[in-house]
Length: 330
Figure (cartoon, rainbow, N blue to C red):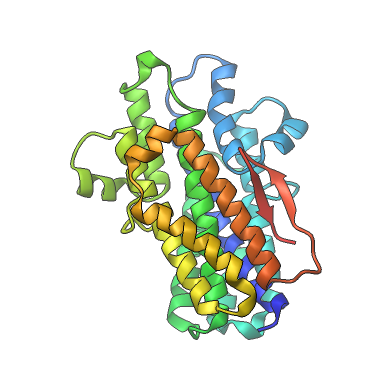
């Protein structure tokens, strides 16, 4: 397969996954905002979190200043100037798909194209209820694309690059969501274990579709340590770091090729750490530090994949993220 074709499939999948994750983050942020806040500073602190997760904080501050519900939601969902917005992700996913229509099935193209056309029919001014419907539609469209891909595409090397992009992006986003809740939204000592803290941890689980899984596995009150264990080390939790690295390593093995030895080594090393690691070790090291190290390794793996397999004619672009850079499509 040509490196340019592989690159388009890889980034198509990453942008679709990123659009879904941004919709999940904004959905939870809007629900969390229903809790009473007293000052503009408290509101800004709450809405700073989704900006930090997606690496949009600097661009937002230049354009809008203090974080507020309406402007953050519009900036992250509909603003074409924000490279991490849902608008930008869907546009780039469609552009990548259009370039390699011959490498994917007609059903896959129809889902992506229809999603883009449906998005452009959306009003640019929406209230809370309309945004909730919009976020649900973005998530459903992402699920539909993955289902159609799994059900119609030949399981060849192109399929492996789609899988690689999807789960690399998902691992990155899950780590960022968990890190921001634990490191930025950490409540005061008096609030730990309180109603607001419980609601925030429950919202985090819902943002990665893990609330029911948590209840089924632990059958107990929500605790930060168990939430972290579920989203980092549980291989049977679809959006956990462990489950994502299972798929990333498998995709790299399927792709094979003599040029990808370093990428496979990095993926295998990270996978082994998650496979044999324990939550006690992560908390002993410091959860923020553990997740920061993971994000550094994921960024390094993404760069190695770009170098080994994808087009080398393009430089990597980035948007500021916490604590690292979010990779943008070349």
